[in-house]
Amino acid sequence: MEQITSLQNPKIKQLLLLQQKSSERRKTGLFVVEGQQELQHCLEAGYEVDTVFWCPAVLPPDNPAAQSPTAKPSGTLSPAVLPPEAGAARCFQVSPDVYAKVAYRGTTEGVIAEVRCKSLRLEDLLLGEHPLIVVLESVEKPGNLGAILRSADASGVDAVVVCDPLTDLYNPNLIRSSVGAAFTVPCVACSSADCIAFLKQRGIKILTAQLQDSHLYYDTDMTCGTAIVMGTEHDGLTDQWRQAADAHIRIPMLGQIDSLNVSVSAAILMFEAVRQRKIEGDRRR
Image: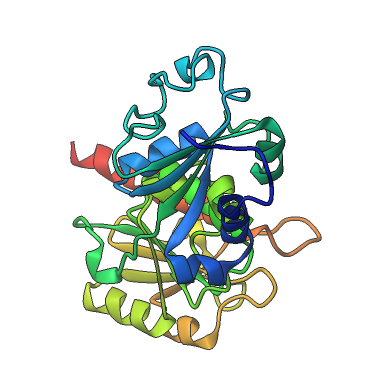
């Protein structure tokens, strides 16, 4: 197996470009996943790993690959990924100095991978009878989107739709902040017009979160097929979504500041839907 000890190695330069530039991710169809837990979620979601970079010095002591570069690892990482004799995935051992340069954080357990992107469309979503969907218009901060995906995973949301995005869905900050939820929650990027048409055709109620002309969120029924639509913290939602909405909802603000972080607001609304649906389910029993 090739060992990489220089930051000038072309493979390391390529890895850094994928981390830093969305244009490189689009051009190559690859993105970067860092950490054993995140990579495991990625594999379970059916993504194809192209290349693995690993550093035995950083791997946990209980991982056999930490003792021997030819040993097959076990435990949290799939044996089909890390060993040099793996199938399609290319594996490279990197020195601690190189790993320290390419790793975003120190708790990734010595594994970074380049993975092939998957393009999910609205028509690909598998929705149940009363789906719960979160729609985000023009989200610009990947950390916020990652946090929303974590809450979406925890609350059992069927899908997250990002309309007219200002960040790509494979931004490393998004994947890192989602702690693997970027792979457990179906996530689609599309235009607002396409998303509105999709929701209307399927009879899914559109609830827009806004302060003006709105009702308290806990007084609004979310037990039917529901799409919770959030805008940016600075500008809110465009008129396109306000006019398409079946209802406008708001979170009561009792302090002097009139807005919450969008990821916090989204979590509140998602778990209100969970609460209402649990009560409805208990009534039907």
